[in-house]
Image (cartoon, rainbow, N blue to C red; front, side, top):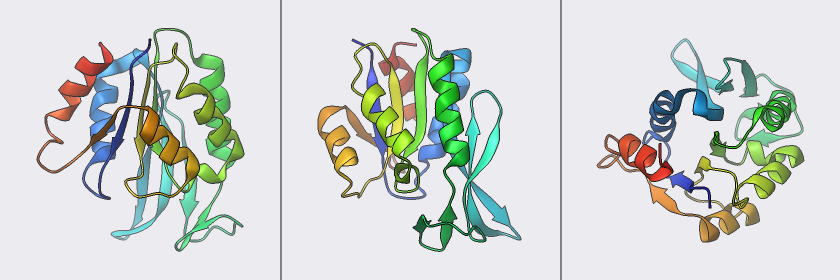
Length: 170
């Protein structure tokens, strides 16, 4: 059975930084994306996705008109859904899927939601993802019940990259 791991923790604790460190360790064996803030003049204005193959695209932005909203951000699903298509074509046994994150913005996408529901429990697919600490979404609650869940804290975030790569068998 392939190793699977969910990371959770308070906002700002360093989950994305942790994922980036793990991605560096995994190199070509990793396939997926992480989320990064878009900052303008020192203020957060939105979020972008950055893929393991070097593409970047907008996930959410203050100035975006969209029926999907989280707080002051309009959410666009086009790039995310294109990324999922690329991942589906590029994945092969032995590669570890990395998803930062399974959160409210991403879960607006039916394509993303269906894909996570398919790959997260698949015994052949190694899977590492960050997931919201507090969420009432049925998929998030189900994943937390069924997969190993580690909480990232200020106390453990610096040692976790090595522990995660060991856990994943890399």
